[in-house]
Amino acid sequence: MAGAWQRSGSRLRTRRIGLMGGSFNPAHRGHRHVTLEAIRALALDEMWWLVSPGNPLKPRAGMAPFAARLASARAMARRAPIRVTDLEARWRTRYTIDTVREVVRRYPRHRFVWIMGADNLAQFHEWDQWRAIARTIPIAVLTRPGYDDDALAAPAMGWLRRYRRPARQATNWAEWSVPALVLLRFRPDRTSATQLRAVDPDWHVRFANPFALPSTPAAPVRQPQE
Ligand code: ATP
Image: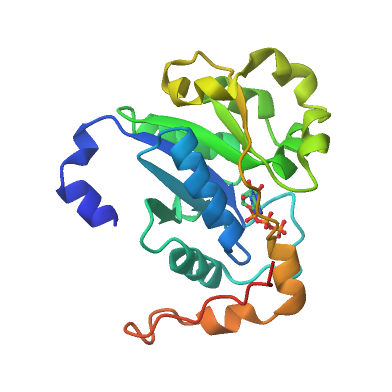
């Protein structure tokens, strides 16, 4: 995708890009669903999934190899305006603030918005320099079953709430001064990677060598029935 994107010359025009960080351990249909909803609600050209080499706030135990997580994200992003990236591994950025600053510095023509589920807002105050993240790019928080109330009561909301923008103006995010926060609600999806690992702990074995059989896509991670 990166090649086509650069060849088409679109690097020269301003693009509206969402950044969604995560472990993608594994990527699942919830990621895809909320991404497509966010693209629509924010009128994005594309979403970049930043597959984290190691989230400082998540336990290492049970974390599948980076290559398998990246491959599962690529499979889940197929035929959608989603760019799966290994930028954090390549740039060796450990914290979101460093990644966000690097993205903004390297792609000055584009406009970026940080995207995260409501569960992340609930613990946002634990992120390194979280206020600096909010001062760098706008933030859109996506509805997630079981977390929306916690998110509204989140410690970070004590500071962020004064910067909240109405969801009906969400498509204007590129003109907002920062900090800016918008909470987006749409048909929720209950899928979580924790739940998928519980039913299929060895999911990553299918993605162990994603380059071995280029014409045979890896089987998708089993998704529970709704
Ligand atoms: P885990 O269960 O291992 O914590 P996860 O399912 O939350 O994983 P992550 O890779 O940590 O997946 O999530 C990446 C981003 O996607 C986060 O911002 C998270 O809040 C968001 N997200 C994941 N699943 C959903 C969902 N079902 N609804 C809304 N947001 C989601």
